[in-house]
Amino acid sequence: MGSLDRAVLTGFICRLCSEMHRVVLHIYGEEGLRLKISEKISRYLSINVSRADPLPKTICKTCLERLESQHRLVTVMEHAAQLLKRNSSDLEIGRGKENNDNNNKNGGSTL
Image 1 (cartoon, rainbow, N blue to C red):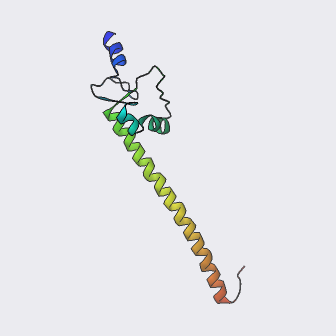
Image 2: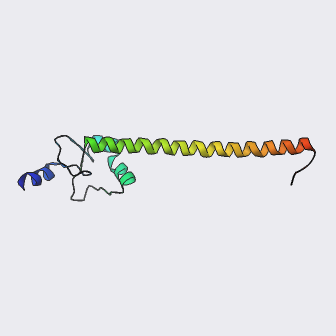
Image 3: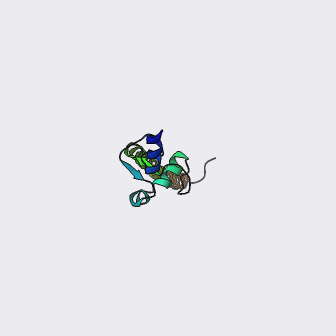
């Protein structure tokens, strides 16, 4: 019991996988803040982390890599969705212009 309690107090338990690790990143440390770990955990995992809660404020390397991988995946997907929306708007505009050009060539409108 003593070693687990000490690990919680010294920050060697990962907030996400709850396993003990010798090397962890402090979520609210300089690097954790720079990487926006708390925000990413909240966004991608629907887990609220706050400085005031009694749970560990550390994340292990494996969970950090998985979290960053998820962030990259979502970022790529969001960018792709924006491109597709923009391109589909351009295609719709192009189709409308093409239909108008065809109607003008045929001398009238079609039903």
